Each structure stands twice: as structure tokens, then as C-alpha cells.
Image (cartoon, rainbow, N blue to C red; front, side, top):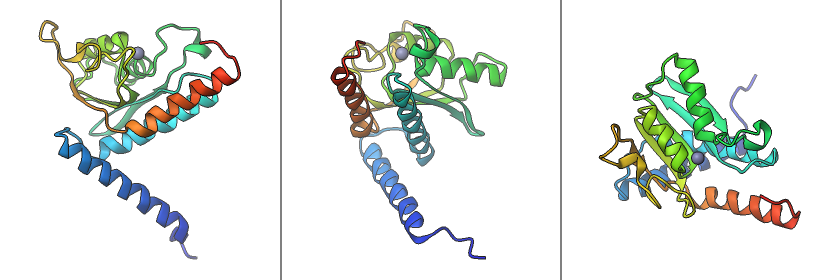
Length: 189
Ligand SMILES: [Zn+2]
């Protein structure tokens, strides 16, 4: 039996890898501290964000990983949980802590589609997270670089290495499309 994937699937895989390598090249030109695994994890975070949009949640996805692979992943779930702190990053940090049975995540990285807000950036510092890689800047709440630099504040007791924005177009389109559809359907935020 022929176990090789069909030609169109192979072409799709090759195209996605070529796209990742081109993003990696661009990120390195911008002196970002990234490797191909980081971008694979960002791709996974984008899929989680798309799933969140289908559930009428603001589309943000997050993946926590280390050298052993994915530790935890989550999407924004504020609507379903009724929890104001149900941002993807906070949910993923809680899941990672439970899975590893420890609250210090200094060996872990977080890939998230949107620049973390002050609450999430604070949670990253409190979790002693090693790195965060985010998809697109958040001009309204970004707390890693855009409005605040909570993850890189020398007055706090931990700093998180930050790379971003690394996937601007796709992550921005996801959010814009989601809010455009909500306005069209007159669903209030
Ligand atoms: Zn947040």
C-alpha cells in the first residue's frame, strides 16, 4: 500500500514550511530570538484562536511549551466560563501549572496570538515564565511593549524575554473579522 501522502497534501505541507521559514528569516532580521518550533507553536495558537471565534469568544489562542513539547494550550473562554480572567494566557498558565504540578514555569515559553494585556503580563511575571512570543501588537491593552512593558520592568522581580509581533497579518485579520461580524450581527461586546 502506498503510505506516502498525496501530492496536494505534500505541496500544502511544503508551502506551510516554506512560509514558516520565511517568517523565521524575517524575525531573525528583526533580531528576534526565535526558532522553527516557536513558529509551529504560534501556528497552533492561531488554530486555537480560530476555534474560539467559532464559539463566539474573542479569538485569542495560547500554547505553553518547553523542550519536551506542548505542556498546555487554551483559548479565550470568558463567554463560556463567565470568568473575567478567562484570557487564553491565564487559562493556559493555570493548566500548565496543574500539569507540571508547580507554579514556576521558567523553563517554558508561551506563544499567544495577541500581545498580552496587563493582567496576563502580570500572570506571566508571577509564573516566572521564560519567554513569550506574540502574534500582533495590541494598541488598546498591550502590556509587553505597546502600552506598558510589564514583562521587562526592572522594578519587578522577574523579566520575561519577549518576541513579537511575529505573525501580524493573520492574527490581526482574525480579530478584525471577528469584530466586524459581531457589529454586523449587532452583538455588543
Ligand atoms: Zn489578557
